[in-house]
Length: 325
Image 1 (tube, rainbow, N blue to C red):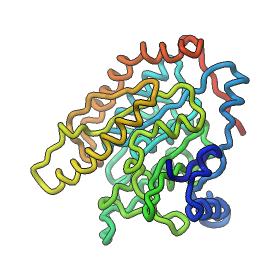
Image 2: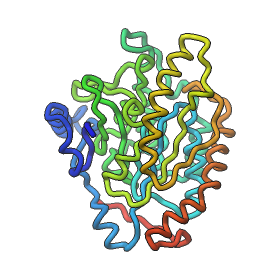
Image 3: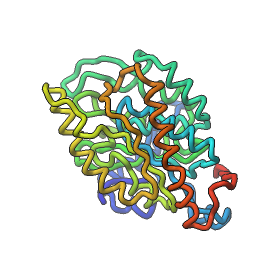
């Protein structure tokens, strides 16, 4: 695997140029007293030690990319929360990085639901014509930072890892420190739609290009049990009668095969039934999309229970997680 990841075991595989740029970004700030730019640091949580101390498996929640279908992630979290399943860390790509970061800040499933239902397109959409895109992601960045109370990634209540793609060489980058909203902005910057996010003079785009359902990142970080949520549009359900549809189909086919291979390495894969192709800023059908997540997660509870059982840990125990300061 290539790319930069906020974990010592896999960070060494990054190219030297990208690694040095991101390390230097960890030392820069956007202004006096402001949060440092999003960057990568060696993993600050020792999950192996946590596993030994608490005598239980380490659980990762992986939230995949999928535009407006990301509302389904909230339904999945609602079911997991109801059954006492709280992840030790979260890995999110694109839409999954938005939901994941807000959840990691300490919001409950009910609070996530309220946030989703009250969000307006104007909260996250800003049109700015540019040769590299038509949407500026600054509003996405600001919106996420507002929802997480401007807490940087490394201080979120649940460790959060945000997947993006370094545009110049196509490396996978997993941000785990600094400006949370900025990392999410990079992760959701769909090429040709969003103007690439610029962090420390490097451009970043949608993490779904290299890892639409980032299971391998979760495994490399130390997860024993990986619960992955796949909300990708299925190629068979994509309209191809126009230029935009063909563009979508190209992306969908690429992501479908990338995700298919990576999801083989998850313990449980939750796939909400989302056949309707929704626009990334569509505000309709949120309730139905969240309900699809609820139903899909309910159907996988037995598999989740079996995954816990393989580690000799019953699902009905109350799972506690103490944030490492």
